[in-house]
Image (cartoon, rainbow, N blue to C red; front, side):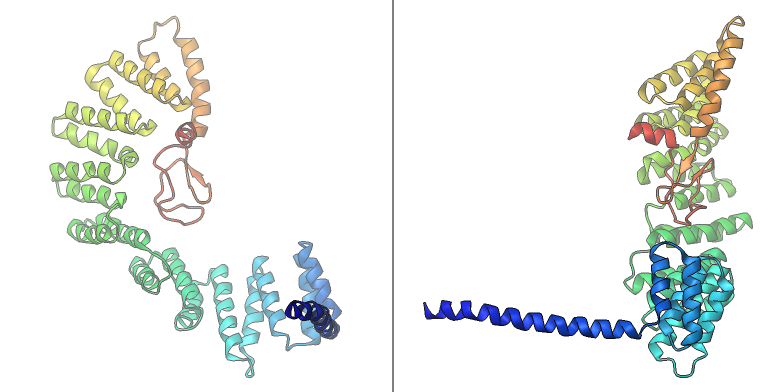
Length: 391
């Protein structure tokens, strides 16, 4: 019982000690805040109210009065860079680096900010030089990411592979997809210059980096085609199904052309029909429709599109169905049918876009690297309307 009473008596004592400590901290905070220039609080208030122009003016006044305010220099530089005034941001960070008494920690920070300024200004050579100085510092991961971005912008794919590999080995996350895509870029350049054998070796490295890289498989087929080996090309393109069934739509026309060249058009059409049964796609339907029209006639093509539209009702599918109907429509109904077709086609074309899953950028063309956010493999091989119907 005595033990419990002593604890009850101690509660007010502990409370009093806590109150005294809080009062001391508050007085210290007030004393420190009084030493700060009033312009600092004005600038902070402008930032909170999303008025960066006025904030910059307030911070500039403080820097004029007290040039030693390192943190304010960093704040100013960042604000200038965000506004696109990269020249002023560069001057701010260069002035910081010019100080002989600047602590090492602030020197490295200023170097990193200067590299960001150069990158934003498009001065890639200077940015690369600056970030290379930081790869052995606490900003190593950020510097390597920036170098990777620079090499991609400059299309220096071999150096991009080295940078991505270094990032991966440093524990900054897997980069297999990017590395495989960089090899594909090199292979595509080799193909342009008719170096088919060199392209094939590079593509093998791409698949070693990422076995599911559809682009590498597609390009391997292109290499065999360039060498005149259509059978090998067909085998390569058919492997896309094992990597990603929806991506078969990207090789459908290649497959059909290859089978047609070998005199096996019906085999090609049947193969594509089996793909379409597994993964509906308006692009795949386009290729199969033309093949069936050529091989089996208008009625069979009509039936194909009609069945597909019932399975996946889209305006893009309806547009294709109206195409088929116009081919064997009686002359008396063709004008009206053509009018409906034109109206539907106008709306359908607005939906016939590929869309980046990261930034939402839409494009008529399929991209391996998004033109909007520069991310790799963020485009679905299906059009936006098809994705909306499926979801």
